[in-house]
Amino acid sequence: MNYPIWDLTFGGGLLIAVVAVTHVFVSHFAIGGGLFLVLTEKKAYREDDTALLAWLKRHTKFFVLVTVVFGAISGVGIWFTIGLIHPAGTSSLIHAYVWGWAIEWIFFFLEITAALLYLYGWNKLDRKTHLWLGWIYFIAAYLSMVIINGIITFMLTPGNWLKTYNFWQGFFNPTYFPSLLLRTAFALALAGIYALLTGTVQKDPELKGKIVKWSARWIIPAFIVIPFFAWWYIGNVPEIVWESARGKVPTATRYANYILVFSILTFLFSLATLIKPKKVPFVFSLLIFLTAYGTMGSFEFIREAIRKPYIIYDYMYANSIYKNQFPGDGGLSIQNIQQEGLLAVSKWTAHKEITNDNQLEAGEDIFLLQCQSCHTVDGYRGIRKVLVQNQWSQAGISRRISSLDKMFHAVMPPFAGSAAEREALAAYLAALAPLDPDAVETAETEISGEAVFEFHCSDCHEYAADDTLFTGMAKYDVAQISYLMTRLDSLDEEMPPFEGTDAERETLARWIAEQFK
Image (cartoon, rainbow, N blue to C red; front, side, top):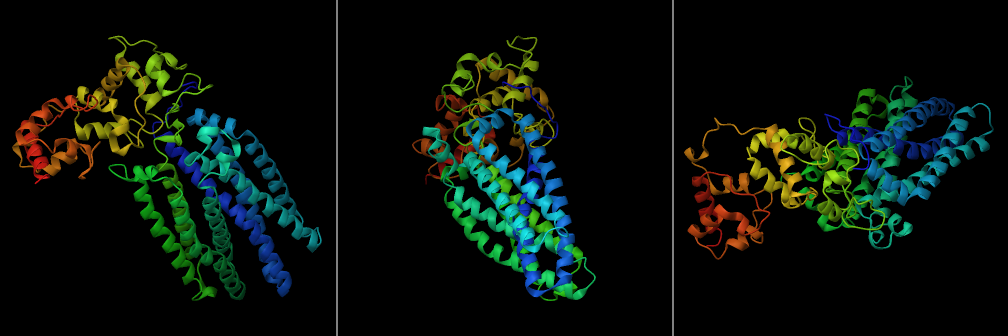
């Protein structure tokens, strides 16, 4: 709200995901690959293997081009995209961890310098000096991850930082160490996976077989320990955070299935390379590369998904609104916005007041401010498709907006703004998907109570005995339940009106009453 909005029709979050996952897949290779270079060079010297040494020189050039050139560019790309798409969240991370970032940039500078000198020094330096450059590179690269890992895990599990704002309590947060070991293991696996790419194009079968077997020794053990570190990581994530994996927005659950499939395939394919290492084709190594990319990408999507509705857990919502008031919040806490109004505190909106003439335009401004960080109109997580499918009236949309934090098991921030702003947003959304006058009345078709519940109630309620819908209705009979559905706001003023037909209402009432028999 303090910054201009960069409105991407296909979704800013999707752009960040593509850039970030690609960079992470390269940056982890930069860490594990550094250790791989040093240990492989020592191995070649120890075995007096000139062919392996010659390949390693070529692999070093590939390594530097991928990590230093592409890795550095994609790293800058992350800062560029998050700075434009989520400037408030980026600003918070910089202010909370400015010294952490400064230390990381020093390690990054040392890392790049050592990598270039290592490449240059193959034919210029003695073995001992060259190996020392390799060790300096690896240590600097690993320490860079040590710093960044603290900041990334802080976003999901800030721990006591929420009370003390202490640098170290936020840095060494509950998921810090399991995440560090998980990423370390994956970095070592990627060292072997990238080596397969350059190793399987070798024409000498003896050299090719040696590289494949050596690479597999990096991949297979890493994928054996990764599940244990992942389990440790999961155990340190608060139970309430996993709520996003439930209901109608099962992003974490879906990607958990993907990560299971991709990691098993990567492990099995890597084992298969040991059957006939001299004959492993480049296409097969590329397949392992892609399944590993799917594994890493799935993990990053899960990490992002379970943090919703926050960008920094329990501190800042995904739409840049602070959960609680504190000195220096700039008036952007949800409590202040509820009092002052969203448009009033936003610096980059054309409409500060809502009138009958500008209601739709103001509603669009509100959509961009509050919803655009996760939704687009027709692109990634497009809202029009949801509206068309559900055919909600403007009144129904307005009621749902007032209880966003209860919908889909609390994966959306609560609406922040005045009643007039809520109505303006509802009017804008209703205009995106006008009600279809030719829709067939569902009353004409026999429909089950469970189906009615799924369509009209499951946004906020679960089919579970302890859900408030069922516990609240337990003392009523069918007629009373049916009547209460005509005035749901008497049960909870934030509940939207029941928008089904009379027949659907009666069917649902009978079905709910049957749950208590």
